[in-house]
Length: 73
Image 1: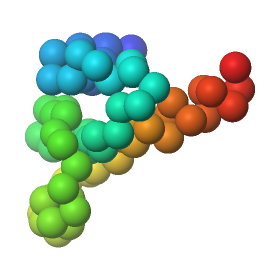
Image 2: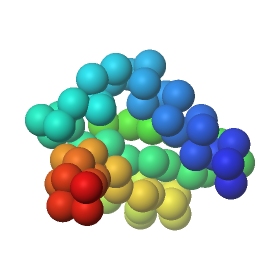
Image 3: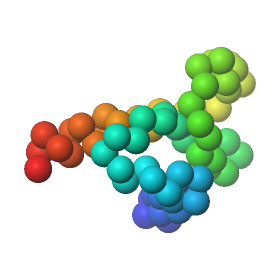
């Protein structure tokens, strides 16, 4: 599990280095299929298509994470 989370964080850092900025709004989706995990920009049409193909999708809403962290801290 740790390797999976680390891969997602590394991909996120590579694709969007500013994801730690509080005003970052771009949503992503984590897709798992055939033992592979991918991080892609969230597109509703693509997400529906992937779900119909039987792939697992986990939405990653960075702005909501920032909001919850701000409330806790």
